[in-house]
Image (cartoon, rainbow, N blue to C red):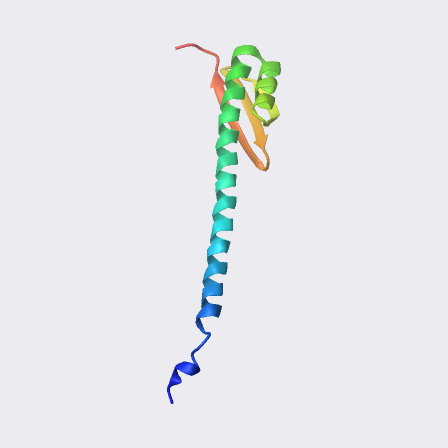
Length: 102
């Protein structure tokens, strides 16, 4: 008798494990992409809020941050311009902008 009768059905558990591992990697990749996107949005919004704060003051910086879907955590004038800190979901970013023109 041949041994291939005992080997029958072994491929299904292996395929299930491979599919489960692939799905886990996809979930991790999607979550990582969301975090990276939030970080980029936070940096961009912080830059924009700092520029707006340097040019027109804190109310404009706050308005711009809210229009970008972020929360302005702090905005302050410095001797060089303005500094802003924003939050997107769980990611925070800071930026500083100069009020001088080049």
